[in-house]
Amino acid sequence: MKQRGQQPLRVEVVEAKRRHESDDARMMTWGSHYDSLPMATKTPTPRRTRRPPAVGVCGLCGKPGPLARTECCHNLICDDEGAYLRNGCRTRHDRFTLCGFHASEAHAGAWSTCQKCRDEFETEIFVWYGTNQWNFVKLENPLSYRPTLCSTCGQRIRLGIDGLTILPDGRRLCERCVE
Image (tube, rainbow, N blue to C red):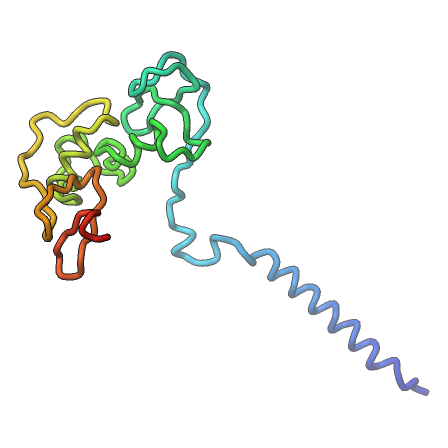
């Protein structure tokens, strides 16, 4: 004679095993970056590797160690990347020079003759990025440009240094006229 509770119990055990096996199969592929064709064919971005400390002085500020080499031009520079300094030599070279921009955008050729870099910026910014104090090599023969003037008071606005507000209609205001 069949007992009443045995058959459902056996079915529950079999179902639990099936669920466990399917969970294992899902766990093998869940979160994998190679589940889809676009992710499987995507080239991974290179990561910065830690190199042995460089010996010498920073090519921009002249201070001794800790130093590193820039990825764009391989010059010695203060190794302030880990400190997240906004005013560090490495940060400023990477962010405020054509050399750093050219390398971060992975353009081919020399930054000083790159047309892609030239097209990215207004002439005044392009010249400032190529000639400011954060460059190891300054841009030779910088382009001439009309200075940017405040639409209200006519004061010169240095785009690389001064703050400004650009209105929806394209007018530019100096910091004093915005307040």
